[in-house]
Image (cartoon, rainbow, N blue to C red; front, side, top):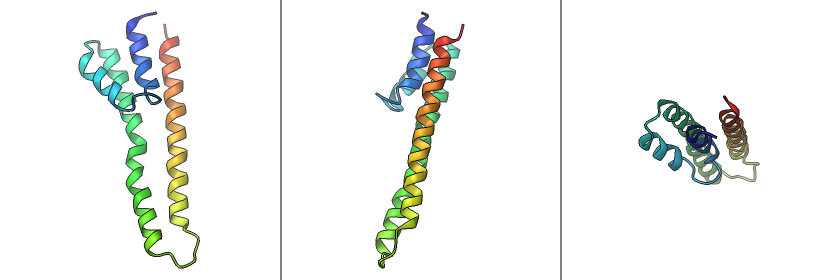
Length: 104
């Protein structure tokens, strides 16, 4: 197995153990353009759920201030969207990591 493939797939699999730090380190430390491309893609995919985090915080704060014995729908919708996005990004990273390992 080539080191380039393993390093590229680890960038995607790092969603489980190192978040966005591992792809960032690989991007700056690697000299191979293919590995850098995979590190960049995985880095952006790891950051996608973080983009939604402010919406969740705003929803929780908004619903906690305006609570009047109502169901906090904005909070529930934002948390469900955040969770679904996180699951989708995780599955996408697993698929991409396996594809990189199996590529010839």
